[in-house]
Image 1: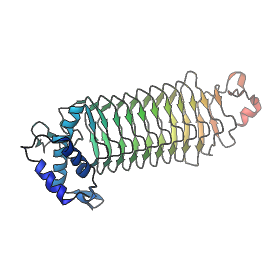
Image 2: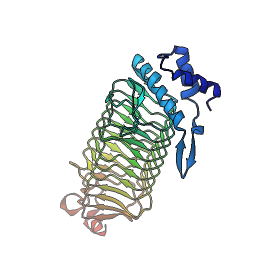
Image 3: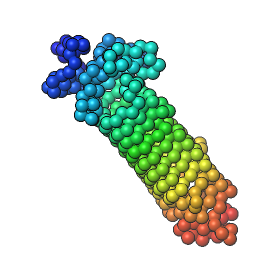
Image 4: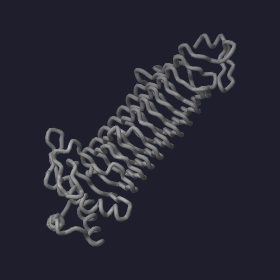
Length: 359
């Protein structure tokens, strides 16, 4: 917790006559104030946080007065290990006046800053309430490694991550709404989503990693476009998982992934190879692979475990392998299997027309 001595000192820093800090004082402000626990700043009321508004406004005032200018000076914004309270309405950094009638609460409070030109580190930070990025483009890399998001993570339609973005080992405890455009590499390695993960219509223009990511609630990737390779290896999908009208322009791997809830790959485009090797589809009401697209479609289900609820419909399996996978309970409807009315898989297993009819 923050000590009374620190609170008394911080109040002096609010004085308009103090315009800058020495390096030692800035380091002290970061260590003894910005990085200290703030759970005593709020109380829980009807499952919501009731914040001490005076402390919250002082916090963001100090962010605007000292942290942003420090970042401008070094061309690098360092919020590592900061513990953030709730957001406030925007204010003008130039005059330090709160714009209480501002329409949106926003992390980057000076809304005149539409493009953030420098790299940002938020490593091991904690956001104790909702986090909004409204109409901002992050031109350089932004690092959320090991960040804990205790409120919703929201980005507006015009928000862009133009540099690389890392969410490695991050934990989202509430709903997540990702931006429409992520231009740089996106890393969600071992990211933990405790609630809704909403990536609807997000365009990933570079490589993406979801390796060992955990989705404890619904995961929506409808309308997503992945322009480069994607890694979902070892990902854990616990509930509803949707890849409807999703486009994979390069290789994608779901190897060793687990699908535990209803899953739907409908009209999904696989322009390159798609691997589901060693993946597991557990019992759920609906697991559908419907009308998949590719030119040609190259799928691999080696050593894959299928549940009885899985259905493949209207899919060309000419270039697909099911090597060492048990297809006993798998349902195939209106699928193509190659020439001459026989099943021709990539494994060159000539099952023959008689066995095809059994499927």
